[in-house]
Length: 389
Image (cartoon, rainbow, N blue to C red; front, side, top):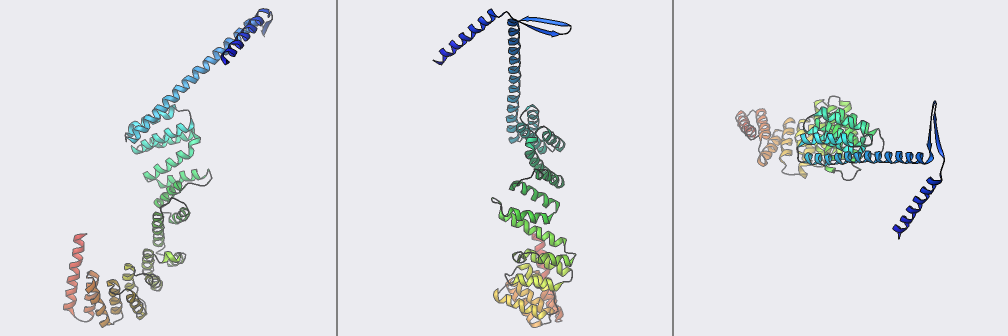
């Protein structure tokens, strides 16, 4: 039914045009001094229709060419992607760059530029990589975020943390809440740059994000605190301040306590180091802190012996605690207790440190033969450790 109605309408329109043309005797005058052009109205209509048809054909031809160009760019993009995942990076770089130049849509341009840049990066051609990303930023501003994230990732892989941080600042200038992935990239850049205070700030933000590896974040926080303790190790005032600002939970971290205590002992602040060690050992007998307590000599060694004996009561047969007590008793000239503790430690776990402590004790007791025997045994242990290392 619709076809019949269309046919009737077309016949009616054709009849109307023919009748109008037949009875129309008007003309159209074009004046361009000193010339005048007069056309019959019907001729003018035919010329106008011809121009319209030609213009329409031209537009369709151009659209067809543009469609062919886009189709070619799309085919190249898929070929480049296939080559990239097949690790044929030289071909992927060439194909993706051609697709980048052919593509008209900003998103397609950005995606092809990223593919070409990543391929060039895999080939170690950093100049081509940077040129592609810079060109894409100019020609496809809509894909700026994608291009900047790619740039940051590739620069970090190259080891250029300063340039990566500059690119991140450009990305942040757009405003808005940054994704977890972007913050993790900054976290990596800050680690490489040694900006440990910034690392701690970022870990605090990431702790509140979902899908973040908590173990990884805790490990980074631990390392950042260690690095900051080491950087403040030569300034006792800064070191004390930094330690005081740590949370109570962080102060019980054995690794942090060891680093802080050693730094304070090196600066001659045995009292602060002793307090740090005692607070940690009250919770659990961290081996390195147990050993370090014997080197943290105070003016009241009897107090240290008393504290160590209280820990030994909670953790009997702890070879490390027995060794530390033996050393403290030697320092306090409690020869009998020193020998008893050291021999008890040796009976549980023999090794170079306990043999050395016994040798030094027997030297003080004027027993050179016993001292030599322990020196020999201690040396044997040391040589075995070196040979198995």
